[in-house]
Length: 356
Image (cartoon, rainbow, N blue to C red):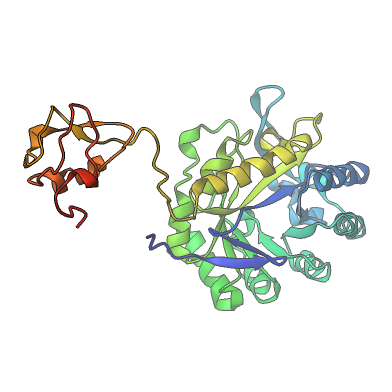
């Protein structure tokens, strides 16, 4: 019997925990670049694929990034190399006015999807709460944002802390802030490995278990690996939520695009996650036996009255008589019938009960 503690929280009426299928959060985040028509198309395709959640980001103010922020590097998967771009200009190209974001969220809710939103400031948090977000995510860039974490912990129905590019000290502190402000019982800590071109050895997937044990809450995976290879690994290590960026099948290179999933693969992601969870198996093991199980047979011709010795007994399948697991019960037992070589030894061939 497992002694693992089962941590669970409720998100939009669905349980996130080891005993339940993992939740898939397809993330349109910054990927639609203010193209509202594209965002609506992504939402419809995700809903058609059976996705119950939509993950997005409330990033409405370019001045959240200073003009002198300088360049940021990211992997251009089309060119196959790392490139640099001005960070402020990237932020400006991805900021979505709140009225436009509201229209997208209404469209998602109309398709039956629950909303998860990353927030970057108090205005974005207030918007997310007003829009009925099922969970609020603190992105890794804000893991040191004391006041935002405290406010989100007080007001969010469920709180997600992303840990990408964070030290353990920063994560410990952010979790402590969140729990002290009311997030106990509604907190999920998210592991966020690096994206391309990072090698697999840098994914540190074992952190999922470490986070569960350290923080006493469910954990999730914000997957930055190109493709779905990490989905099953994450589920096996306890990830209750699998977040993955989604993009149109044909899109330009850009920040975080290299590890995003073509929207057409969303259904495949759902299936892989569910299959991975089901493969872990929570039901008791039931032994079914089979024709290849061995039983005890006479190693040679034996006469009635013989007290069986070890070298009188051999084995063959299927188990037509006493099973091979009971060999010790037969040693010293007297036969009451003659047996031919190779004949199964059954209870009726023995004098006395050897079943004890």
